[in-house]
Image (cartoon, rainbow, N blue to C red; front, side, top):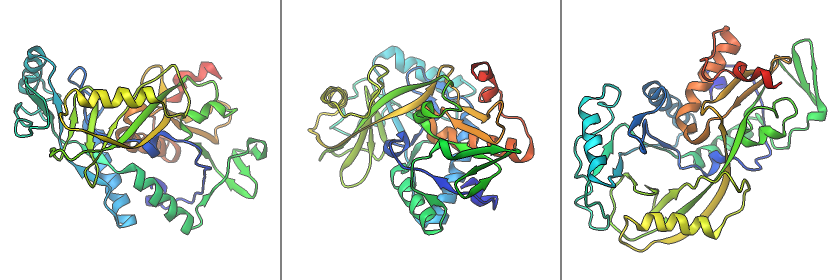
Length: 333
């Protein structure tokens, strides 16, 4: 989308094996709900996210942005007290934490005896449909090649890259966890974290909002909801498991008093980084090879800002945010 907006020529090569974005809930939320703390660069990320995904809506003539609050059910009185203190006085959180803690009281299907905190300026991006629709757009406009990238056919010379009959100034590798199979970037400290998610159905009357107890319950359509995700460092594969299904449904039943039916289950692997920051920038030796990776669990919010940083670096020679710059890992090459 950035390259389209900037009128730059490009082509996408992808064999769509597995990517975490295609099953992600797409929630955007500026607050870490475990500690009631602000996300890194939250205000900038939320603002840019809405601009970028509005561009997708305008290009594809469909709706992908859904604005609704996130309700975090309190576990005890101390959590409630901490929330209210931060909502009233913390300069980074005042705009994002509501002081109303009774939003869920009118929903008899939800068990929240101590109340809940409402996070403002939140919602979800319908990534599943957006990715599918944008891929269709790229194919129609001859901007998409469906195949596995063959590194044996990559030729690097004179600050150019050629692949089969394609010549380019740069190749941007946005491969997620699969970058560990990339011979040029395989030594980056990308850690695969498996996540399993569910689509469930319930007849309960629930708010048009994300409800966060032990697990997230996010509204979709037709009385269906997204539940997830697990966080498994020990079994890094793409298999659905009964254990994850039981873990997620048990987590929802801790606060939802109505029955749920599991409609779908999916698994993928998130690319996370040891210091919890993305990795963007050029290969130290082959400057025409570029990495865009490590968005982790908050890719929906991070990606638009990181793409801007990367584009401004490549085209305008502006510095990348030092916390996301690949140069911090150059000693691994």
